[in-house]
Amino acid sequence: MADSATAPATGIVSRAPVAEATGISKRYGATVALRDARISIAEGESHALVGRNGAGKSTLVSILTGLQQPDTGTLRFSGEPAPAFGDIDAWRSRVACVYQRSTIIGDLTVAENLFLNRQSDAALRPIRWKDLRGRAEQLLGEYGVDVDPTVRARHLTVEQRQFVEIARALSFGARFIVLDEPTAKLDARGIDRLFDKLRDLQRQGVAFLFISHHLQEVYDLCTTVTVYRDAAHIRTAAVAGLGKHELVEAMTGESATTTGADEARTPSPAGAKVLLAVDRLTLTGTCRDLSLSVRTGEVVGLAGATASGNVQVGEAVAGLHRAEGGSISVDGRTVRTGSVPASLTAGVGLVPEDRHVQGLVHDRSVAENATLTVTDQLGPFGTVLPARTRTFAQRMIRDLDIKTPGAGTAVSALSGGNQQKVVVARALATDPHVLVAIRPTNGVDVKSKEFLLARIRGVADTGKAALIVSDELDDLRACDRVVVMFHGRVVAEFDRGWKDEQMVAAMEGVAGTPAAAETEEHGR
Image (cartoon, rainbow, N blue to C red; front, top):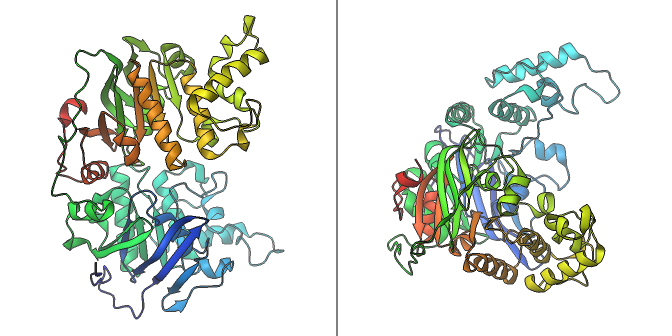
């Protein structure tokens, strides 16, 4: 589709785009990360980049910021060729990125963070602290950032840290800043203040590439939006002339003309009892008065984008977070929140979000990793008998079709898909009443993905229940129902037969989404 003409937000006439990428392609082995992609950002413009996971946004950002080299294509800043790869100072003077995870060092002051590695005029000269504070005050004042330069950064709010990161980027001379999910950890007032600051900077000619899963924010802040899908540029258009559902269609490649909400609809099992009940759950900074239930024989999805709170709710069911209010019940019995042992005893199994950080002990064997939740069954009086461990693990290896030379093989030697199977095996080892699987197919191949989703379905088919917490549409298609969260509350619920456009729109907080169930009942 042809691109729409774009203009800077402030009416500034720019001789050349502040950043322009054309014909960008990038491969990682057999994986095509970008294919003939392009984007152009004008001076003083707030330009949104949107797309589903895997669309190519992160790869484009890594190329725009000089972290990766494209295989083909050209990149220019203000009409000049991009700096040589590896010339860090030259790249910093042209572009900066404020990531979702702050790069501010908490134990240093604001002034030290602003001029990190630039505290003095030369490497061997002592730091003149008064001058450093003066430089920091001048920089913060120039861009209207109301932060004390002498304060330790750990005492700043998330919003203040972002302002400091933006000011630091501007201090290098960059007039183009990439904002990667900048509102993920901000409340509504913080978002308003951030947007006000960004608009002020736009009036000074600073351009932003704004990446967000929340499409309403695109309409609130940006003048232009570019859509990527399947590693390629799909469309660039003026935000004002693009309807929200039309934007979602571009992201998903699916028409919104047919909802399909009743296609292949599978009702909840008749008379089935509730195995998992979350009643008016309140988690500090995440959700308030959230309720949902999963019945015997059901696989329920809990969908949501990064800042929705769905992952924290799933982790709370597994005992990883203490509730401020409300309750969690399994098979009719209330479970003490904030206690993993209590959740295990109640019959909850967990497949965590990040297998590398939360799921595996990398220097231990497949057998040891797979049996961590059942060590009390592997020997008398608190002992663990190696023979029992091997026997138990070998049965799980067969059941989960884990490709490994043996039960004693280090889990780090396995492929990503087989490592994930080990994590699932451990969750299933206790024969849980409720299996909570958080992004269970993240980073695995198609065959492993199908196997793992079928295995989760198998849990429900044996009279138990499963809760899949994910933003991946393939994960959610395996569910009987999908409950959608947005900014800590339930906003929609879908039975089987939903369309991609519906689900994405609900997760992105697009108003007027044709939801498939009563929102108020489930999101009170």
